[in-house]
Image (cartoon, rainbow, N blue to C red):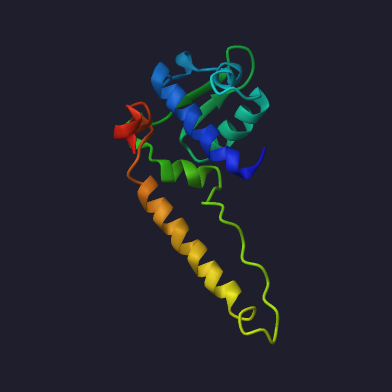
Length: 143
């Protein structure tokens, strides 16, 4: 799975768990059900839910009757937490190495890296104001 897909899959999975009220082991939702709602492969969902579990946002149980459930209320889980849980960033890339002796090439890696850091900071700040509960609202009010 590409890094660019981890965040959308994670946000979708959390919103789906919130929608179903999956907040305890007795209400665990299987990776197959989560995957069917996206749609994607259950293996992809299990990879992402594993990352969310390691971050302490959800819990999971393997086997028959297994699945995932929220450990926090959806209004307490912000999307910047989700992004960090899946080791995401804005994915603008990495600045290429510069070329010695070139007036642009020698400076561009630092300049591009600074721009990427600024974009990541802005994205994180904005995502910190959006919760999983907000994702379940009408699209115009969630952003």
